[in-house]
Image (cartoon, rainbow, N blue to C red; front, side, top):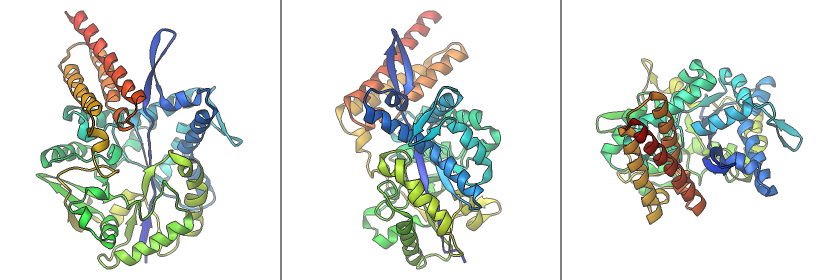
Length: 420
């Protein structure tokens, strides 16, 4: 009898930057800038990041061919998908890492997405932090991501996207804001993943209660909205990004089983989630030292793996719907995967950036004109809402956000003059 289901989750994102070359401003991915950097360390890290983006498809394909059944959850921001698509189409693009040549990353995913080993979750197009993003742009962020993913991977693969990842795991404060976001997400998705820190009275939970809460799905009800949710396993239990080799993961899974059996008879769901490309572990160690050996040596009649949607339908489905056994409540102060909102809300520069984004968003939505021009402007607006421009808290990234907002304002003025 299966006692635990382990499924790692990797979150992938790279912001865009606005550079001036030959007298023209051009938006490119930060990772492209890194790759062309004269700094050998920065360029080298970019190569390792490209390998990290390629690894899930590569290792899944390798394990499948060897007769194993790997499972992994992934989410990519829409702007990163566009970058990978552009580079995958470039016949001259090749990144070599320790003798391995990486070319068509998108093509690698197309070869394995129909083999039930990778489940993609939806997210926001530009990795916006929802609590700080204008509400009228929430649906735009979701639709733009879906249009991007569907264009690249096709309608059938888009129809298989059932879960949702909040960028930075940012959960809005206050019941009315959260219920509006849940309503927006439910237009497209069956379930979402949350940070455990968002749970009401989280600070009062014992270590065992945290694991018990994280190891099962719950139904989240806010006002007149509801959605099934799963939780990221606490980082102090399995710290995927800092490093946790296969034997450590196996030990922790067995510990979770012992803790969870006190409250549930169904298998414990264990979902460690982390950035997929940041740091030495995720760039170099995770796939060869944890992922691949787990599916080669740790799967048995008690420890298994499924994608999250497979798990929910196997153990919590009733009449075709996902029906968790328990209900969960969240804090009314909101949360993120670093526990608080302070990296996005605190400080004069962050406040100024948010105010400017809200002002520019209102101006964009008031505009009238040709559909193609308005769509280009909305595209830039969504990019301007990227969380990195305020989260990283450095002058360079604040300036990038200001530059993109300035570009939007100039285009608004141009369109207004044309219309006038």
